[in-house]
Amino acid sequence: MSEYVAVLMFILAGAGIVLVTFFMARMLRPHNPYPQKDINYECAELPVGSSWIQFNNRFYIFALIFVIFDVEVIFLFPWAVAFGQLGLFALVEMVVFILILLFGLFYAWKKGVLKWV
Amino acid sequence: MSFWPIAVLELYPVFSWLHDLLASIGLPSAWLQPLIYLLLGAMIFGILSLIALFLVWWERKIAAHIQQRFGPMRHGWHGWYQTIMDAVKLLQKEDIRVVTRDKVVFFWAPVICFVAAFLAYVVMPWGDGLIVADLNIGILYILAVTTFTVISLLMAGWGSNNKYALLGGMRSAAQVVSYEVPMVVSILTVIIFVGSLSMVDIVKSQSGLLFNWYIFRFPFGPIAFITYLIAATAEVNRTPFDIPEAEQELVSGYNVEYSGMKFAMFFLAEFVNMFTVSAIAATLFLGGWNGWEFIPSWIWFLFKTLLIVLLLMLFRWTYPRLRVDQLMEFAWKFLIPVTFANLIVAGIFKYLGWYW
Image 1: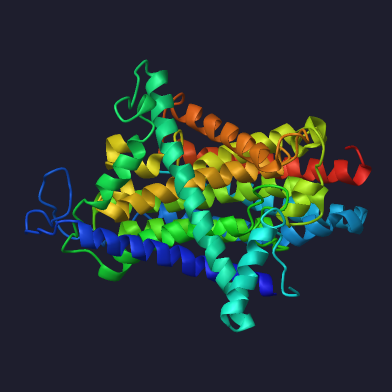
Image 2: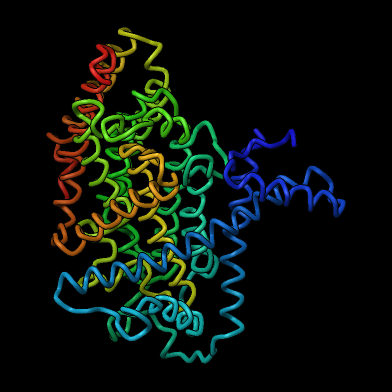
């Protein structure tokens, strides 16, 4: 387990270096804000309203399908690692599993979910 | 030295000297290992920023020469320190903060973006024995941490309170999420043959020359390699899959409100990510550090990785950008069925022993 200390230390080192760089830039850079500079960039037009609005739900549908497939992939990882020792039964089992999910994908496809409008 | 799980074999003398030095100052021994990992992290950061500086220059030169220009020429021989000057310039640039931003989200997005890209290098096998920590979940770990980039891009898009940025962030999330599945399944095709997730085991299982590498080791290896490469190009938001930052329509997307060092961090993370996916491709399909013995292993690793980076750069300046609908339909209607079919076929080949 002690190897996982490396992950924690890399998080600290990465975030630390970035924050130190920000601090260095803060020491060096000019600071001259005024209202015109601080409005949102919309190609020199004044922005109308906030952009924290309701959004096209296509993105969420794809995210939902992704969650299904991601869980499938998580199941595939241990199977792939242990496949050498498991033999025919594991192969058939996993082919059936993948086919069921691909069938689900084709169902979504025929329902028109995968169509980007 | 009983705590020594790190496989820094080639740099072992340096680190054991450092370990003894730190021990002789009287630091408690429980602190030594984290401290050395911290130093390794700083070292890897140095290497990565050198690589990113080189890659930016290289990309500009390649772009220029494809378009029959010279590109940067003024700073040094063929402009070799142009990107260093750019970094110095960005360091001095004012940090423009939009008034309507979400302060916390806006500030932490570049930090998370860079840390996510940086974390992959804990398990990156730079050469024979040149690896920070050989975690036994290696490749799964890389896939897990690099996905945090999506969150940071969404944070940047949402925190800027800018319509272009939000659209860029959302597009990027949809795209990265869609291409994650074919990428992971292409990787699994190789994992079946290795039987381990550790990066070192993956490289060691393909020791030897060209025909021991997984791209040529089983008949459908090239297909897995190509699907991986396509998915990886989409994963790092590069042309032809760069709709999240399409300059002509979204004026560079999620990072439009960022300036100065914060922008530089997004830029750095982008190039580090590009190097990461190329390094994974080199490790999984092209045999990692394996090659002729008389050339040091890390040169092989860098050579293969930079070869794939070159390929990605040539893609960028060769193909036009895809539309959003084409992009999503390509992932879900073509790549996912193909990669799953390839996985099943590879499983059958492995079961029947039709590989070498």
